Length: 350
Image (cartoon, rainbow, N blue to C red; front, side):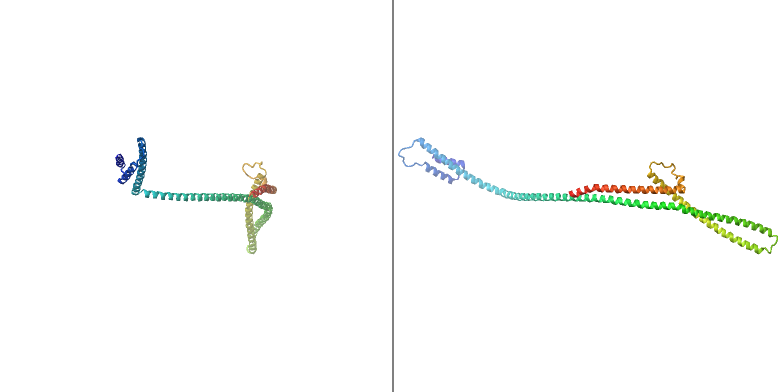
């Protein structure tokens, strides 16, 4: 009875099914049933100890079975709860997300490796481009140096040619200035001689006219009819001579006006030449002080002094141009000789 009451109490407490209770009761009865008659009876302590051990084993087995059933029931209800709530879908979605994350992570790692490789290729290309640019800059610098040297040589040659051309023009101008006064003086002498001859002819003609007028007035009272043809003839001769003299006077006047214009032009040319001479003297002798009003000296207006000044200026300018040409050539040669080692080193380095 005590075993049955215990089983019922355990059933009431644990809420176990009746089938399990009956099975446990059968096991308890079997274990608690009296065995075959022992030759001797056990002591109560042994019986109690054996019963205690049996009850302990039975409790352990019962607890194990209860735990299994409880765990299976809890698992079943938990599965139902998960299915009802949707945790399975969440778990599947989480698994899919994890797989997608792994796939994206692998894609990211591959993209990162590709980016690193492309960046290394880009760095190599940039480095190669910089090297090419540096090489091109060196080559351009060398060519620019060569071009500057050639430009300097061409400039020196051009300046030398221009100086020589200007010197030739100045020589021609000086020769014209030297030849001009001589021819002009000869023309002036010729015109002056012709003018003096014309003046003498005019004086003789006036004297003849006076004599004819006096003779005509004296003879007018003597013969009026007989002298009329002679007087007409003398009048015709006189008018022809007057017309010829008038034409000669007009020619002389026109020539004198032309000579005056030539003299004015020659004076302007001489003033320009004198200014050029003064500038050349000032360039050759900077210590000389110019006159206050800038007027030309009187001695330069004379023919001999002008010719001497022009020849002196010509010689001085020629010497100065030659000296400048020689100096420019020497400087160019020295520069070229100094630049040759630099060009050699640059080409050797490149």
